[in-house]
Amino acid sequence: MGFFMKYGVIIIGGSYSGMSAALQLARARQKILVLDGGKRRNRFADHSNGFLTQDGIAPDEIARTARQQLLAYPSVYWTDQMATDISGEKDHFTVSTDASERFHGKRIILAIGVSDTLPDVKGLQERWGQTVFHCPYCHGYELGQKDIAVIAVGENSVHQALMLPDWGATTFFTDGRLTLNDEMSAKLAHRGVEVEHTPIARITGSADVYLTDGRTLSFAGIFVASRNKPSTSLGEGLGCAIEETPFGTQLQTDANKETSIPGVFACGDVARVPHSVALAVADGAWAGASAHGTLIFG
Image 1 (cartoon, rainbow, N blue to C red):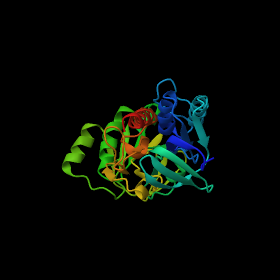
Image 2: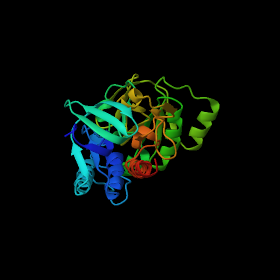
Image 3: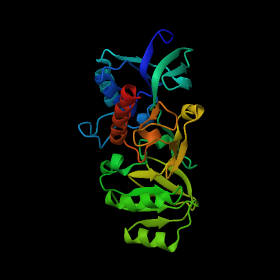
Image 4: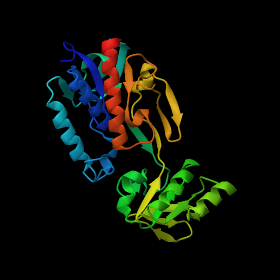
């Protein structure tokens, strides 16, 4: 199929932003291809919250419904393959996959998401998306105003700790990664945040913090500001500019979601902060519309 069909737009990544971009293009009757490796960032979570009309629905169900609706458009093609390389230039891109296929398109939309790096605390990674979270708007309400922990990774964690008392009594663990100055301490005190300086030995139970002095503090949930980077190097391989954010690195885009490489767009978590399903869908919709505009106006 890849050798004989040229698409208007090839979308790499079939999660929320990618499918949202595809929907705009499908409704513009464009021939598009979605390449998806099937590893959504929120695959570890049981529920997705804060997305209008889909509040509390399982991520798999949201994605399945979206894909069914998208594939009802006859100009949409989908393949469960991982893109491994992109070459060419505007109007003449070639995408290679892990199945040794090549596809050709006039425009590229990178909806590749990000990978999360958590601090090196034993027991944290395996609870990611279950009782360890990064976004209070996505998961804070469900904790029922019970006790919440925040584990520091840097100064950005202070901001997270200052937000969370609206969702429950908050304890901030500096864990040897952050020295609080007087201003930080005063702000935390003003918000009623307890500060714990004893290092963490490991996370146990559901969301229990076992400290090196032998104490165990129990919480309904733990929040940590993970460090992000693009989930693949496809954008960098093309030469797309990368920018630093308080959360890590992402692909740099302009107001129309186009990267520094003409004809290559990016959307969702890999191209905006902060992150949520709702924001990714909105970002994808604009990327799809913008890519379509360049097919018309150049």
